[in-house]
Length: 104
Image (tube, rainbow, N blue to C red; front, top):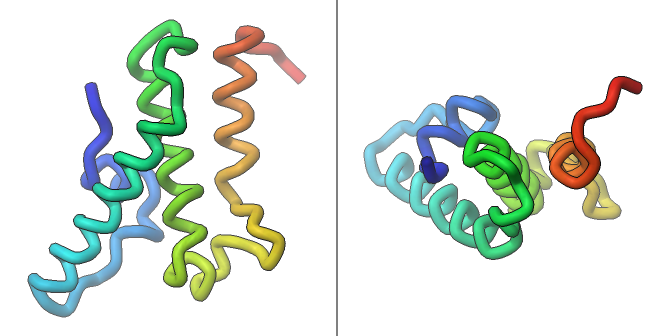
């Protein structure tokens, strides 16, 4: 399964803007699709044991990238130092893929 804009909007409703016109909804989907493609380039799917976990990593990376856009910064999804609320989630998925799940 590959990640699409609807998956990002379902997982992260903060990126599902209440579009006032069809054009802004199209632009929003285009930005999300662009960031999904960018995330796919940065996530190595071969390190994940299953597609679902790889998709989860792509979703968190996409959210991280979207949070770093002007919209995300304005919505305070990214701090001034560039960290986002999605960083720790992405790191947890990457750790689980590397080391296996562990109970803290």
